[in-house]
Image 1 (cartoon, rainbow, N blue to C red):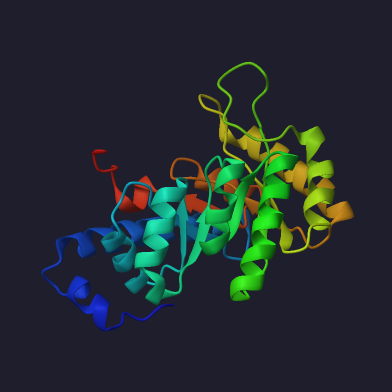
Image 2: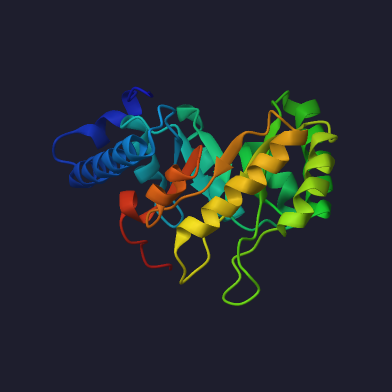
Length: 251
C-alpha cells in the first residue's frame, strides 16, 4: 500500500468530499471482489487496475493515498501526461486501449504493461522502442498481454486477435528481447452474458500456458462483469466507473 506523502496530505483532509466519494466507491468494489472470490472459492486476490480515462491526475493521487498502485489508461497522450505529473507516486501504469504502432515509443517510457496487443507489427514496434528505452534509462521488461477477441462474428466487435492467432503472437512476444509474455486480456462482447465469453478466454489461457507456462495472467472484468471474470480465473480486473463515477465531459 502506498502511504500518502506530503503532497497528498491536502487531498486526504476531511474537507475533501471527492476523497470521501472515492474511498466509499473503492470500498464497495473491494467488497464485491471479496464476495466474488468467496463464491468462486478462490484465495488469490486479483490485481485491481483502476482505469482513470478522462479523470484528472488529482483523482489518481487520491486513489494512491487509498492504496491503489495500478492505474489503467487507454489514450497515450493522457497516460503520458499523468504518469509524468505523478512520477513521485511510483505507480504501475497499464495501457489498456487500442494502440497504434507509432505510439510505441511514447508508451515504452511509462507503461508497466500493454494489455491490448493484437497484431505482429505492434509487437515489433514495442520491441524496438523498449530496447531503445532500456539503453537510455535501464527500465525493466514490458509486460505484454494478448488481447483476444471474444465476439462471434455476429454482433459488435470489441477488438482483439482471434483465438487461433494467439499462439503465433505469443511466440513473437516470447522471442522479443525487452518484452515479457504475461498472458491474455479480453473485453466481454456487448449485449451478451459475460460468462460464456470469460469461459472461452479461460480456455485460450489454458492452451497458451501449455507452451508458455509463465504466461498465467488473465486480464478480464470491468465494473459491470467483475464477478463473472473472477469466476473464470481473472488475475487482473480493470475497473473504472464504479470507482471514479461518470467521466467528466470532454472539453
